[in-house]
Length: 393
Ligand SMILES: Cc1cc2nc3c(=O)[nH]c(=O)nc-3n(C[C@H](O)[C@H](O)[C@H](O)COP(=O)(O)OP(=O)(O)OC[C@H]3O[C@@H](n4cnc5c(N)ncnc54)[C@H](O)[C@@H]3O)c2cc1C
Image: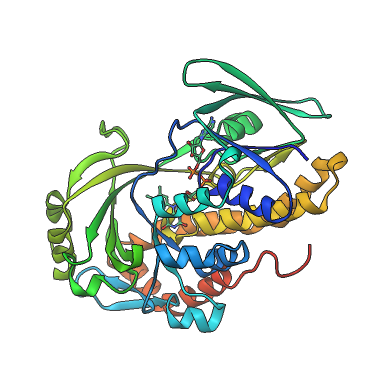
């Protein structure tokens, strides 16, 4: 089976690895000339960690990441009171078999690239067109000097992220991006400079209109720290604009001193506008399928972007391996049927969290705090306890 994957991000690479494990070789094309990722942290939940082990990547992943040592508290902004705890440490091992890990995105992407033969990944080729005549699909690729290339395939997988060209072709206007009205300020702090409380496990601080998250990554040598603030829709700063943590103290006036200690320890970082999409009505058309952020870009408030993408990858690989080359569309429809409801549910829950995390103090916030201990645990069961390969489809 000839398989072309557009996008060599986490989703495209994971899919190529999952296909390889099932004896199928995919070619992966990416518009970036060099597959270099921004240094930023990702929290990887038990469901994704389980799949990395299934794909034979578990040991390598453990070597570059950091196992969260304790459960993850959600704290109140002013006094640090614990509203609820996410089961991500020992409780996660007991309940789901695997703890949550923190990892540097660049380390994860390097690990995935190294798991594939180098001649499978083709950087510097942007997808600009796509056709499917029913018998085969064709991808139009443009290289850095404007040269045009055409690739024929039995199946094309659009793993080209938030700004997916493949999703735009499949869905037109329904694929539009929404501005979340939020900005993420991202910092990497050497652990030796970070306050002691930040060196062990994920913690979130919830407050009116904003929140912060921090967790250790890279074997505990670095603390990833993110602040979420309301963002002006017409903010002229480009994505990734440099920012210094000292400029954020005023945004957190009245917040707990730990938050200010962390800001004081952090130095230069970057600032990103946040986008998301509404759920798409479908992920496949003929011989073309969407996967990862291209299919279900979500706000990162549940830390499930990679988890849902990994679930897509293993299910799609299984459907293609068990399907027949003569009926690729049926295999893709099966993939969509197995995945779309769950991913859409997680996408909508992530959006709901954005609203809840930022509630002003008052009756609604008090109701949230009363409900969260149980709700957060039940949601963790739903997110982390799921095994997409558990029941044969
Ligand atoms: C601020 C922030 C924090 C986050 N935190 C977390 C977290 O803690 N945990 C978590 O699980 N998730 C998190 N996420 C989400 C996570 O990063 C994504 O869900 C995940 O990276 C999706 O991977 P992907 O492969 O689908 O897309 P991407 O990683 O975006 O990869 C897409 C690839 O496609 C390529 N491409 C794009 N267009 C074309 C084209 N036309 N032709 C060829 N190639 C193309 C790009 O160059 C890129 O390499 C966060 C996201 C943000 C914005």
